[in-house]
Length: 499
Ligand code: NDP
Image (tube, rainbow, N blue to C red; front, side, top):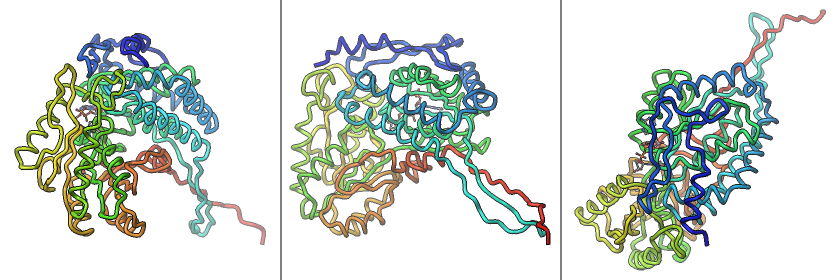
């Protein structure tokens, strides 16, 4: 069993400065920020914050790496090799990544070990596979002024990509942005979250070892309002790939609109999990609980609206409550802990506020609602029953371990409630009827629908949503499209064969 003291010692091995132009670069701004452990509320480390000067240098170096440097001349098969090497290096140190993510985010390390790190490694390998397959098309075009034409397309990197990541799963979500962009030949400038920057800094330390040329990848730790804002405002950035809140997503969209620069925005959700009367309730209970409580509920795809057929409503609520009560909240480094702490005091206040609102609005608190009597930003796994879809706890993203259980009487009503949301990211259907599942999967408004399993992750599948959940897709072929421009080339042929 790994001890907290041993985990904390690992933090001192992680660099704490911006990484740009292929080296660690002490910030000239002299600003720093503390990284706080959500469990002990103690300082884990202090990191140098990149200021506007570092942002400018990182973007300029990224641009010259593309336009004049080695990165722009690197062919697809070499990019594939580099990405495979990076995946191997991450794999070799995946335990360090998992422990650091656990400390930084406050979650038990079994989650990053089982999900975030395997997904991160797979994502780099998957996109390594695309790097040398970015083919164009040959398109038969018409004559030009009586002359035959020959037309084809080529796929070119978008350019400098700013990647801005959130604190809930910074390693994996970082990989979702970095891997497709590097595979496409873009240069990436990453701004990790101030609450959890450690694994992004560890990743930067592997970049050179993997063999990426200077400027291909930079990491700029810092505050969102300073470093992040300077990055999204920088005219040298061609594309912004952002995951976080709709409020910040809006700022990203406004900054990007000034130069009509491209964006992908992944802004969370209020995803429904629909349990039909014929569902296997053992599977559904386990899956729904994972959907609402995994990662302390701090998941963009959290299935926090739990729609249950009236016929099985009481039984399902009872089962789900029992499951919630089995969760052991505590220090991720204590034996048996299955849920950690929320990221910071602000998030704790926010989640606690929603719990109070749920009770004030008349929803029935069936379990949780309180806080363990200890230090740290903990909150109990919480469920409300008899929730109406108009209540605040059914409409707003809570980003904590709080589920709202809503009854329904027919399939049509279930779909109507599911789609009555400002968000549209993910949905889960629990049913034994395969025909119902596929028919209703088409009617539910979401970027990803899972049947009989909550949010199965796979880098081959496109990921993203619509409405307040954002726009654009990461992962899969869509991840390549999002980081490339398709250029058409037409040659007018002046050659005329002898008559
Ligand atoms: P933010 O959207 O503010 O943060 C996400 C990222 O954006 C962080 O790296 C942040 O930096 C950065 N950022 C903040 N402000 C700016 C800016 N002006 N310009 C550029 N980048 C910026 O989310 P919060 O951390 O404040 O969390 C608030 C709420 O957002 C949560 O309660 C949750 O509901 C939602 N959220 C959704 C996520 C998702 O997966 N969709 C993930 C995280 C949060 P910094 O960390 O330094 O502030």
